[in-house]
Amino acid sequence: MGGVLFIAEAYTLTPEGATSDFGCEAVQTLLKLMEDHRDDVVVIAAGYTHEMRRFLDSDPGLASCFSRTVEFEHCTTDAMWTRFA
Image (tube, rainbow, N blue to C red; front, top):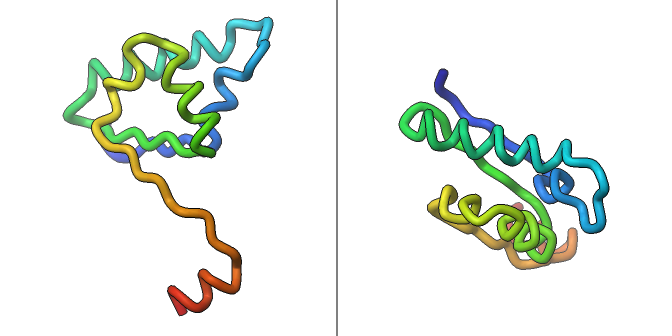
């Protein structure tokens, strides 16, 4: 145990209008991991702002498991080169 779990496009676990419960089962497993190993693992869930809000609202306890939210402003490729090059 230990390390970082990075979930790109985490909102795809809870798609709108989904009929299967595989995503719900994955979220429940993730919650258990985060609760049972809170001192042993870091979980980063990433995705687009609107979809991530829906993901975090998909389970009553999910949002409270994440201690920080970081939002990055949208920028063009040219703006990124200017800012970070």
